[in-house]
Amino acid sequence: MTQATYHIPALLAETLEALDIRPDGTYVDATYGGGGHSRAILDRLAGEGRLLGFDQDEEAVERAVVDPRFTIVHGNFRFLSNFLRYYRVDGVDGILADLGVSFHHFDDPERGFSFRWEGALDMRMNRRAPRSAAWLLANSDAARLASIFKTYGELPQARRLADAIVRARATAPVETVERLLEIARPLINPRQEKKELAQLFQALRIEVNDETGALRQLLEQALKTLKPGGRLAIITYHSIEDRMVKNFMKTGNLEGTVDKDFFGRSLAPMKLLTSRPVVASEAEVAANPRSRSAKLRVAVKL
Image (cartoon, rainbow, N blue to C red; front, side, top):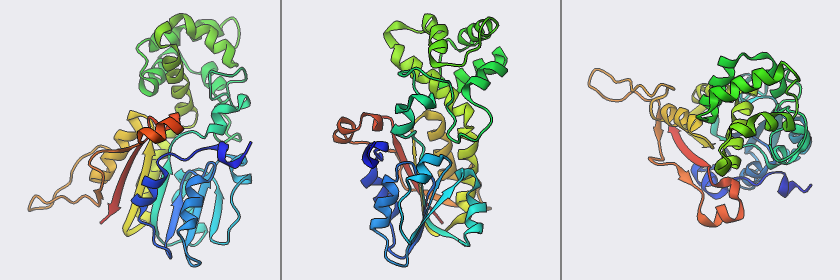
């Protein structure tokens, strides 16, 4: 597999413009993946510039670009502050996070991210993590599974799916993609099968990797680590992430509550630069259909 097909970065030109990269600046690519965004940032940095790339997947780390200005961090971006302290970085000029899953993960049957392939239900971004999707399906009660499917997959049949899984696992473990499809397909609308199966697998992946919890921690730490005037650029792919990012960029908190001073002036620590999210052009969607759901939001620290 070539580096180019490992992952095609979404909204690349728009993201670079959003970061307003300074040649001598210090930047973080919180989701290194195939390195597409990182390489483009490095192209715009001078010799004194610096870039740190985060990824919890060993394969991404092993494939990381070698450049004296670049540091690959084998870890989850939820530990951003700790790793920046470790590498003696006092503040950064920009942080990028592309929250999409790499092509490599979807296209590798061994990882279990896609319903298109037979294989084990894994779905761990960090393969050293103890809890896979199979573990989740074996150890969660029906109420918990229904909540996951409803919250992260927005599936109207969430409770029926959860009940069916609990009944099925009493006779045989739900450990493979094929076994889960066998249980789910009778409850899926045939006219929307691909969409609803994608939503089911998305819900499991988000829960297995605690993606919303990690994003919450990233946002809170980004605000602390950005220098005044620093940019935060985040690409999301579903409504929960997008709502979290929008609220935080507008108000500095995840609830979207606007704090004001005595005179009624906003005390928000950031300014949202994108009143509407930036989305992929028709040309990009044609070249990379997975960019269709990408939404870029950008804010500057005041």
